[in-house]
Length: 222
Image 1 (tube, rainbow, N blue to C red):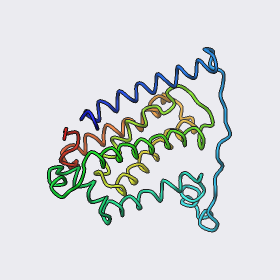
Image 2 (tube, rainbow, N blue to C red; image 1 turned 90 degrees about the horizontal axis):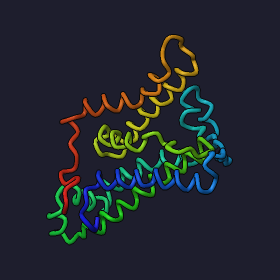
Image 3 (cartoon, helix red, strand yellow; image 1 turned 120 degrees about the vertical axis):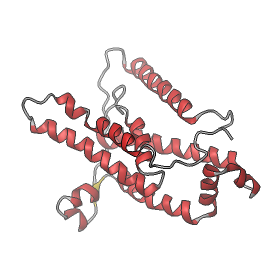
């Protein structure tokens, strides 16, 4: 924000740096042979009553606490962006920073806080992957999910509830590829199942091109 750098380029650079840094630290601490690292995962917390509903219950109401936080976060953010002064200020900065400055809003401060919040959410997602799902660390274990998140934002049209719905779609695609592999369909290479979420990403980006209007000042140096 301070150097007015392109967020996509800097974000990609930081991602590559973090990938190398975590791999280096892992090998330094646990050895080049890659000693298996394991940690207890947080268990599920079923919601009494609704968790017993077939299909929907286990999928939405028998999850770790962090999943409930994510489910609540989307409507809270949607309300905040639409109904609060600070949320409207952030939207104004994304669309027309000059008008926001004329209204007495400090764009740099809002942009910095937004970037910090986004980074915190990304860190929370990575922690969830380890502490609530895998229970271990493997180099490159996110498998490009962060880049899929960009496609999810495009599909959700930069709106919290739309992004949440798109995330569920991609999550379902990821679960399906695991299910297809478990079913052991003969004659079909398992790599095709692994590619399912990423193929869906490409199809979504191709289909959404020109129809999903991004914030007018997205990626512009202000």
